[in-house]
Image: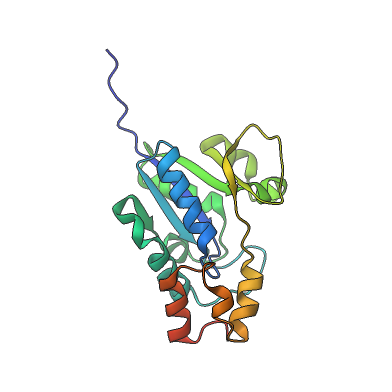
Amino acid sequence: MTKPSTRKRIALFGGSFNPPHISHVLDVAFLLACVELDEVRVVPTFDHAFGKALEPFEHRMEMVRRAMACFGARVVVDDLERRLGGESRTIRLVDRLLAEDPERQLVLVIGSDLLQELERWMESKRLLSIVELCVLRRTGFPSDDPRLMGPEIPEVSSTELRGKLEVGDFDGCRGLLPREVLEYIRAHGLYA
């Protein structure tokens, strides 16, 4: 009889989360329900590698905490990107997590919209040699890539959401942003 593995399987789900929306929540629900994992670690970008303007990190962290609170202890919102400092690069995050615990088995979660740019990521070949890749289907990004998993997650445009929030169209964001996130945005005057 073989001894069960004690290696902890952790899904890494990173992104700008500017703001975290319902598709992010659906992604995590799918991961918890359908992928063999011990934990989903949600990691907001600290300093976007491609220069995107972002709301302050502390606000995005708090919005992600609120969006993911419904999942309990199996979802950890991690500020590791801030602790690493500087430009956010996935390989730096993975290297740090494996340095802390080399026995971890890391599952890198991306959307199919990122498949074409994956080769441009820093040290992409090395990255893909040390993580398992989980690619979630995105509406509008069809692919026959065998790594695709699950149903198409509805496309929610963060750019469009920010545009609505900028003009105070909170009603137009209902159902696209978790309630607690929308309340936080209103209370702190974000994206205005």
